[in-house]
Length: 435
Ligand code: GLU
Image (cartoon, rainbow, N blue to C red; front, side, top):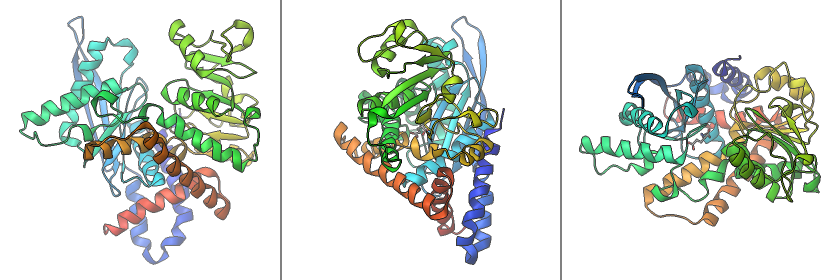
């Protein structure tokens, strides 16, 4: 399995080569900045001891990588997954630095993770684990230091436990005036969350899809066929908004497989069916009804090779690699997961003319609404759903337009085009600080 941090460094090196000519008068600072950006500022790690319901104690390896804070506090989610590793959180925190720079929101990049399969824990165990992780991090985070959020397998409910534990720790230290709500985003609406945060990543991706469809000359949205790998928060909301905007979603899949419905599936009905059955693979749901005759079962890998217009990897990293990249038949890929394509696969796809909208742009709607949540928490004044969405749209559209302009100007792929803007913003902030 490819090392995600090595991928992140390889991507940075490619961009640095192209950017170097902009810094001929400041070569030494530029080189120092790039060198520093190859590793996180700091990675905190520990083993958390948790009392299990049966009275035994189990240990869980936990991380928080703080990559760069030149543009603002470290920002990024916390992932609970059995594949979490040091190299993965390092890569994910690096990508957060670029993501926040692309959208221009005033944050750096961070990411946390615990090696755990949360499905194997009871709710009480999950809560104890989340509180223990918060104890470990309490003096390393804060509204102006590092602002965690949900990521794979973490939810608003988990953020609420973390806020509560963080506030207890502040109180113990006599720091009662600090703002615990502004230290975490992705919180439930009843505890300082923002309207629209749940759907923001998926919806932001569909705002980008609309702009991409214009560029590709797709006039009739119904004829645009989309396949989505992943049906968690991001995949579901992307599917739902794409369907509501008039596109035809023909396939969705989860880790245990998925469904292909040639005439287009209904994401809401599919989700309701999945929740009822505990599994997606028997949910062939059109707008009319769920029925076996509507479609066929496909594997999580097959979904990547379908003959569609737009492919949306919305699950985990490294799913498109040198072994399957040539089999991708989609005309364009919108990366809703973080790091789903390896650098070798990037080259194959570019050679085959597949248009790419990279993760740090396509899925930045989530962290952007996290930023709106933080602003609302700091000012203690809350916005309507419509206000949130109307502030998100121009940011997503501007980022896309900037990417497209760079792509045409430098004749590079979408990832390079996006990274050129992002890395430049971060390097400039580091140089302004006098690196
Ligand atoms: N985990 C999300 C991401 O990868 C959101 C991060 C955040 O809101 O801070 O973009």
